Image 1 (cartoon, rainbow, N blue to C red):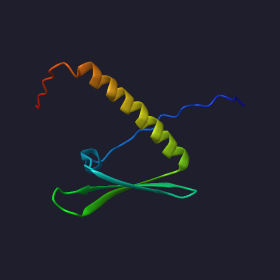
Image 2 (image 1 turned 120 degrees about the horizontal axis):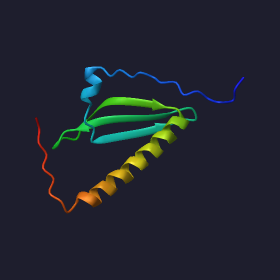
Image 3 (image 1 turned 90 degrees about the vertical axis):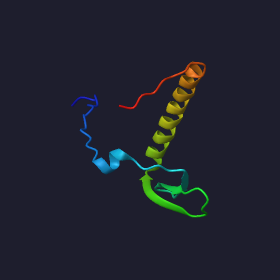
Image 4 (image 1 turned 135 degrees about the vertical axis):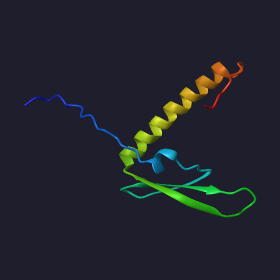
Length: 94
């Protein structure tokens, strides 16, 4: 038997509701020994009420992977902002 680990390719399908995404301007987190819970919601301006619309439950290992992935991408975003901050970028919507 080989000690090599084979990478399996997973085909991911995203239905239209998920692909459209949900905007969140508020987030709550909680954790236990076994899991991390991330709740996302929306607070309308001039109101004092938040409607939570999404919950993601992760193992501690996957929460750490998410943390590292977010940190990496935030740093990439900051670098891009530095490079483009003095340039006028035109955006067009087709």
